[in-house]
Length: 115
Image: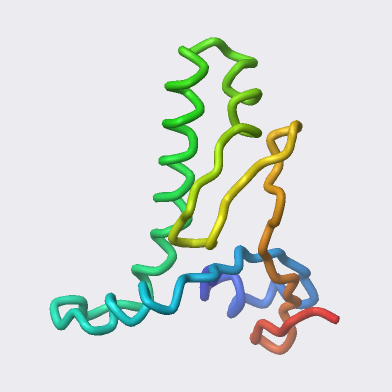
């Protein structure tokens, strides 16, 4: 999630934050959990966000041929069956079509879903 230091310090009381919500495919979670060589598996799942981001940016740059504004134009043409989300697509503004996040509040040195 987000940093433990942020939650535990006294200055963050009452702060509302948004946190990426990762929707990993169940077969991916099963495969990772079955690997004995991963001792700290819970941290590995966060790596799916920058992994998917790098793949998408790479595709957009390749298709735009490094022409500034064309990178953004290419985003709305990219569909990626990702690890962090089942399907990643963008609108004409370059924003995610189906963003997935949680709104949380920090109270009493704990993080809770915000209603």
